[in-house]
Image (cartoon, rainbow, N blue to C red; front, top):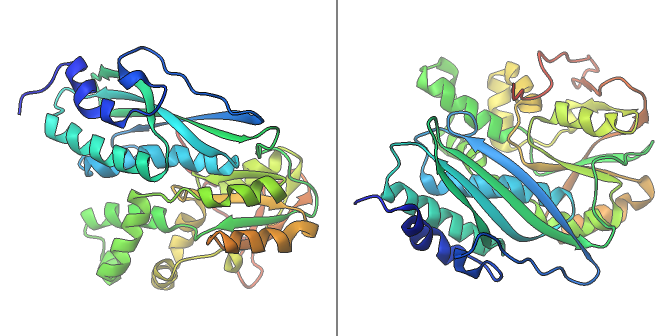
Length: 331
């Protein structure tokens, strides 16, 4: 199939995804109508081939991940998605078939999350594929949930399970090297962990509970240990976390029993895209009830205390754990 021109590319693959105010992507800008009593929230994430995903991954999965990591940031702010802008730097070997798969995955998620395409730009990359998405959301006026705000004695919660995506990535990398321990993982567990890496689950259903009860929140993208340290540091807090209190999936628990050294990967590996938040004790019961009603049970992992040291992680016997690094490093 011959490759389309830029105008044809936009008209064929992306104009069908355009939302109200985008003028069918025939203009250089879009209008986002601000609703009375709401603030607009903006967030941006960039993904690069062979850094944030594998170059050979299915194009639809790449598109979904690019959108969902931004939606995860909106979820942490308590925001409802309103639309997104797409920046796409295509390498020289792109094909129309690849782009069709990318647009299909992107369109399906845009519809599922009610977050239409508003515009963007496409350029040629002299290096790898690069995707940049700016997602826009809305929160009730002055109800945005910031990272800064943790108070002494706040209870620290996470959604979902931690470490699955990092284990999925580790499995894939080690399987390519035929590492022995990967042979002990069942196909079902491997598929589950790979799915958690491929397709993050933005916890948008928690936004009302966060707005109502959370002092602070962020999504866990670079690893629980490092992201918790970032959250606490902003208000001079620290915490002690017993790793047995950190929620793990059945697949992660089985793998950890076989390879205990993977605990560091679970606590620091990143790509969880779960939410981390701080809730005052007086609101904890109401917060847990609201989260449960939304189908997103939360798990308490510790309590914030005044202090400038990074949070301490301990094993079930009370022994302090030392990680080589607390989180994924971008540079």
